[in-house]
Image (cartoon, rainbow, N blue to C red):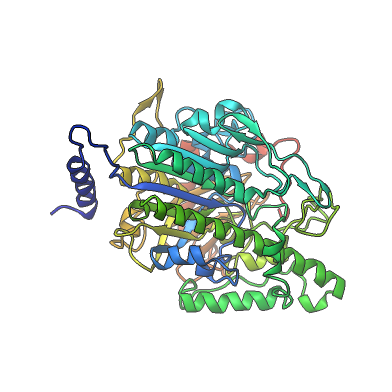
Amino acid sequence: MLSFRHVLLLALFIGAFISLPVAGQKRTATKPNIILIMVDDMGYSDIGAYGSEISTPNLDKLASEGTRFREFYNNSICAPTRASLITGQYPHKAGMGYFDVNLGLPPYQGFLNRESLTVAEVLQQNGYSTLMSGKSHLGKDSLSWPNQRGFEQFYGFIPGASNYFDIGEYGKADPVVLIRNNKKEKLNPGEYLTDKITDNALGFLDEQNKTAKPFFLYLAFNAPHWPLQARAEDIAKYRGRYDIGWDSLRNERLKRQRELGILAPGQSIAARDKDVPLWNNLTYDQKQLWKAKMEVYAAMLDRVDQNIGRLLSKLKDLQKDKNTLIVFISDNGAQGGFSNNQRKPTRNTGPIGTAGSYDYQEQPWAYVSNTPLRQYKNNMHEGGFSSPFIAWWPGHAATGKLVKGTGHLIDLAPTFYEVAGAQYPTTYKGHKSNSLPGKSLIPVITGTAEEVHRPEGIFWERAGNRAVHKGNWKLVSTYPSYHWELYDLGNDRGETKDLAQQRPEIVNELSGDYFKWAEANGVVDYDKIKPAQAMVIPGQ
């Protein structure tokens, strides 16, 4: 009997054959279009479909009409996440085991190597138009820019962060250096970067519609990454919403997560972060400052959702909404730390949210964003690298289904290649291609499986932080300590009970798996390669 996967591929082939044009007739694309949407530094609970009070009706629509995962994992920080997402490789294998910084060894060279093919390169060879708008962060050298790695159209910025306004009422911000197809551009006064990223994506779709090809669009928003800057009308929606403080807000989100099924019955929640002060212990002025930060953060995500609504309207206008797969994720958990003692603002010449300000969400609100999980960006506990995952594919994705999932970034490339019926080449432009370690998510997205079948497990290492996820077991250590902690994620995703002492045989098994993976991927002891001035990530 044919499997669902074989039936799907056969249907795509037959559809393509039937649509072959007769003489003088314009050919129409039948292969599915693919859109990957990623936001930046957004926590697990920050959209409505995962428990948030922030208004995200368009994402909530995709969730109600598609499939959500409880467990989907990124690489805990920007550049390594983007390397895995765009190549299907673990970050070290792709050349970005640390960041977009060259530490002198191939797994840590700070830009994508040629053996790791991008999704754009593969899909372009298989008849797709390849489009990108947003944050790249895959290497500073122009040879690593999107147009040189398979994207026919690109608009966005190359480094890890950008201001959202170029010139504002409260003084001139640092220049926003943007690239459109290898040429520099800038924002005009009054323009907002989230809107411009979408404007260009929609323009690319209009231009692409003149062809008969299917398309792959990678829409990489930088919101809600710092600096906290938003349009005044969006901030106004949230005035007063966060007067209740972080503990009350976290309780609201936990209640909604239980109602939605995001927090499964019997699951633990992370212990209260001892570094987060009690809201009622703050002064009046302190509360005014803190609630303003979250009002702007919410406004930034609200604007992202508005722009996703614009994208959905464009698909409908182009009559491509019935034949498009959309995947939505975040690149890491919300960022912890306190800016007053680690990462200081570069300027502060206006109220929070304006072009002249430069503020961060910081740990108390990040603690809420990552509900119900533990820890923050750049940490291998669940809050550091867990992301919402929504897959919307009319006629294919299971409607309104919430599953365990247990997917990882390395699974996106094989998923897209299966959807596209694309062949992954063994060599590309004279380089032998790295094999793909991930699994297609199609069985889970379409409702024929509850989670990815992956007996070998999933692995992480970044700046000395390490983790293994195998079955329900999670092994994790946090640099500078190399002490392993062990958790049973089947009932303790909040990571409240370290079972390493009780289950040494599991620790031995998973640590053995880790070191085999580390050797195969070129992972080096962080103490041996640690840069003289390591990156400052608040909270670490």
